[in-house]
Length: 484
Image (cartoon, rainbow, N blue to C red):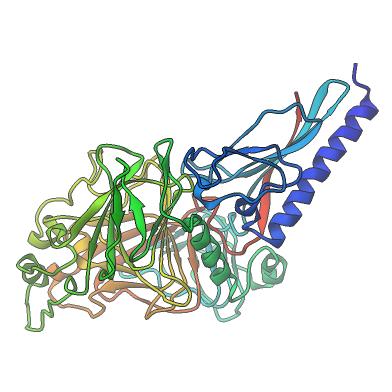
């Protein structure tokens, strides 16, 4: 029988192992993908055709990018070891599990980690820009932290959550139960300062392009899905496809026949917004319906292929990125948007936890939400180095456009979030009358332009993906002792 002292010694060693690994991880957040730690069991690479001609990678060895962001472990008779489980397309946390064996019994300790900022539904590096319009409302389902001022007057509901601002000039609605800038210094150590969001972007971009060689398929997944001009991809049937060098935009839709695949389309500068709707009472939608270049019409795009999603759930594009497609109703202004995947609802209903990321901090690109995004068993996070645009062809005018997505915008291009067109068109049929955004909102400094919406509501909600947060630090969300 194991004595209390022996168990206590083993447990303390297991805790120390986890703390040691977490320290390395917070020094180098990419460490988990860079090498196998000295305390880890040998990792198993699921890519049987990797260039190293082996599947097992021992402690201290480099972890090859072509093995992707997923692995197993060789079960060895070790007395002292750790296992690492990274976040993935199915969700989950970054999990560190340590076991120490003593007197024939394994004593373990485990921590589940999420990115710093996971516990705030709204985080801003500067002032909170305008995210409500008309009869729309703001509703906070979780705490918010705003590094500046905010306009929280009129149709704003805190629901008892903490709205923490860093400015005395914030306009407060009488519906706000709690708002306090005096708490900001206390919470800011969990928060971030200007520039940290840029580091988070670069980190997720690196995971999205983990494999420097051509894309590899294994176990109905891919090593990565990194869309760059000239890069060699492999479709789900393992056919080699080269991304054309002349493109400047990408459209991604879920594959109807498989919830583990996405369809990718591409276009160049010839597919663009050419409609100007300059005459009074003109119909922007009718002009677009007859256009051979409008990006809202899927017939104007070229099909690249159907691809397995990566284990990480991160899909990267160095070009402007379009997510979703409403279809013909956006131009005829009749009926509902098309069903994109195998659901009854219009638009997308994600089965996996996706992060779509566009551009880089040095070459900012934009993300266009070009159709409804519903709540599903998975989630969608949109991470733009440039702007997040919501064009008129994302929905028929009279319909409520629902966007259930986490939005992270650096705002390195013109706006953080904007409607298209950016001007207010007087003909109500050219607008989207009602827009509702629900999800986590993480914003760099900048402004919004929502002129072509009549009413805009925002409902704050905690993020759905452990990768998405404010800084590169990881925080424990769960700790437990294990006796095996």
